[in-house]
Length: 173
Image (cartoon, rainbow, N blue to C red):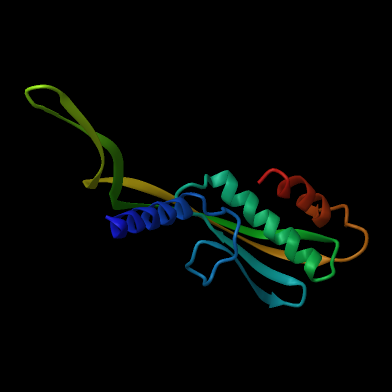
């Protein structure tokens, strides 16, 4: 019974960790969930954000823009220009698995000739469900190529002040 409790607690902690994973994270690789970037030339980078199934297209785009601004500031620059952008949306179908546990109390009553005794015992029920009806999952990937610069922002083109982007987006995410 003690081992069952430990297993149940471990499963709940593992499921809770999955459910509360942060959205804005660094990717471990180019195909992993999160942001990653690659230097193309001096002051020119390709910035990508691979979204998970919980992120909308707009959130994925904003995370890419936020990462571009953070990278610009980390490189000692003030502004950046988006010179190319690309978005991909994919739908995959994966089976869904659910695990559930329920704690209940079993009441037992024994009656003799003179009196009755009642005892209450805790019971744990476990259930595992496999949903074979596959639900489509939508994932977004957003990429942008940026050119960074220092000093005053040029007037022509689509330029972003990196510190303003970080202030605007970092607080909303």
